[in-house]
Each structure stands twice: as structure tokens, then as C-alpha cells.
Length: 380
Image (cartoon, rainbow, N blue to C red; front, side, top):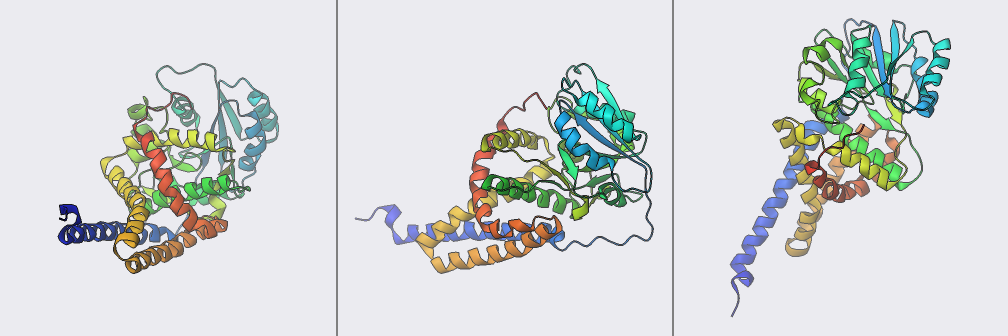
């Protein structure tokens, strides 16, 4: 006697349900590729009828970053920018030789300014207080942020980033990449960073900006004060970049810069353990995004997470020809769009690894989904 689970009707229903769910996940994935990511893949900046070179204040916060400042700060100081710019380094209670490195550089670069913070700000964890000090000290309306461990990819970084400003523009999002090194860890870190970037840049191009990265971010000083700085997110250790953008950005005031000369690069983590700790800290701020952003990001991640398991189940239990057809359509679509995006973001060497790392993201989502429920760390 057959059990209900082994009946032909029950099996047919399970097969239909499997095919229905796979089809839904497949359509969702194609929607994100064509509606969002294709905007970046085929993006061409509009030619401006008139352009203006705004005075710019570059702000860098540093705590015990003497080696990074000695290595990377000259790349910021030698920028070719016809208009006025200043570089402000906020020294947040450093106990190393940061002060002496800055003093030596100021002898050559008169527009370099340093602000020293000598004690911790109570109840304001992370970088928010030193960043606020830097904004307050800035002489110019256009603020451009990067980190002490970052270096611009070219001497035209400031020029390219400020060029995106128009009358209504208040936020400009750039790409903060990592240096190219040998090894699988470096490739995966860069691919994951690229994968994050195509999301926040494409969403911004679609009129749904939701985050930026402090390694390469610009906004107006007036915007910062209009939103009372970081007051609404001061209790959260992180989020001085992504949460502020999530709070202040909208479709009419946000622009992106997609240009290899406008990229900043920093040194990636050298061990899986260090990188895991860094990413886990980053993901603790995503829970504070606006509901519509959490929905869009969550739906994409869920569809990505489910795609490969459902594909395998379909091939084994239902029809391998359908599974192969779905796989090929998605893979070709993804490769065309991702490879074009990689050209624009100067990550061309990652193209042969697209499929491999796309599968690896299944495990990535499995591991880091739990970080959404963790309490943020108190240090920056």
C-alpha cells in the first residue's frame, strides 16, 4: 500500500511547487540584473552644459595610523585640482607618531591641516565624533571623505568627485576598492566589495540610494548640519557613512561617479579571520536601514541564496534540461552585466571568477546572515 507521500498526485504537486519556486527566484534575479545592475553596466555620464570647480575640503580621521598616513596621504596632497582645496586630518587620540608625520608633511603642503582630539567623546562611539570635528573645521561647502589607509587611484580624484555636483546635488557616491594582490582571499574580498558596490551604485542610479562607503564619499556641509550631524544614529558605533547616506539621500539629491580615476584603494585584510571580523562588523548596521531598502536587499540576497539549491533539486528530481536552461540564461546574463561593470570599476581581472564567486556567495550569505542580529562593537 502506497503512503500519501509516495502517491503520484503528491509527487506531481511537489514537482510543480519546486518548479514554481525556482521560476520565481529566477525571475527575481533577472529583475535585479536588468532593472538595477544594467543601469551601472551601461551607464554613460551625461554631458553637462556648464561645470563648476567647487572648493573642496578633504577630511580624513586617523587613530594610530602613522604608517598609513606616511604611505597614503601624499597621494591626496598631490592632487591636480585647479580650484581651492584643503586636507584636514583629525588625529583622534593617537599614541604613535601620527603627530610627527603630519608636522613633516605640513612643511611641504601648506593646505594640510591637522586637528588633534585628546580625549574620548562620551556616549558617541566609533568615528562619529572625530568626523563631526572635521566637518566643523572644514572651510568649504563640499566635503570629501576617505580613510587613512586609502589612496586615490589617480591625481584627478578630487576633480572627478566634485564634477558630479549640480545645483540640487548634495551627496556623491564613489567606489572604494582594494589593492590587487595575489591569492584567493584577495580576489574574494575584491569581488565581494565589487558586488556590494554594484548594488549601492545601481540603486542610486535607479533613484533609490541607500548607502555609501566612507573610503570614497562626498556630501555638502549644509546637508550634514541640516540633519544635525550624526545625532539620530550616535548610539550606533558604525554607520557614519552608510547610515548617514541612508538617512539623508533621496533620488533628487544623490549622484554617482563611475570613473577609474575617481576610485580610492585600500589594503585588504591579510587573513580570513580578520576579514570575517571586519564584515561581521559592517553587517551589524544594515538592520537600521529604511524598510524599503531592507526589503530590496533582503529579497535579492534571499533569491541568490535559494537559486543554486533549487537548481540542483530541479535537475535531480524534476528535469535536468530545464535546470540547465535556467542556469545558462542567468549565468550569461550575469556575466555580460557583471563584466561590463567590472570594466567601469577597474576590476577586469575578476571576470574569470564571476561564476565561482557567485556560487561562493551562497556560503557567504549563510555565514553573515547571523551578523544582522548581533550587537555592534563599540570600537572603530
